[in-house]
Image (tube, rainbow, N blue to C red; front, top):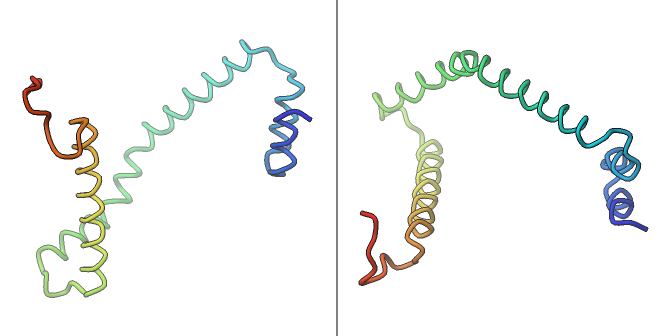
Length: 115
């Protein structure tokens, strides 16, 4: 039993994909062309619908600005959610800094950096 067959048995939702992989009907060049066409379609639709996304986000942005301008209306729940989001964003920043420096503590002493 091949890996693909085992995968299909374990995950029934992937059975049709596994069958297409184990008995291919298209050459790789044809499949690559279809992938490129779908990729182009994805990015075209992504770029052309950007205005709709901004239009849908505008009312939400107005609510956030209203809360910032009138902080007395902020509930404890909203404050807690904002605090948790802020902590997560700060954590991602710290992990990115450690990754960029290749060190948990800080820059390596004596090592020349690009800064």
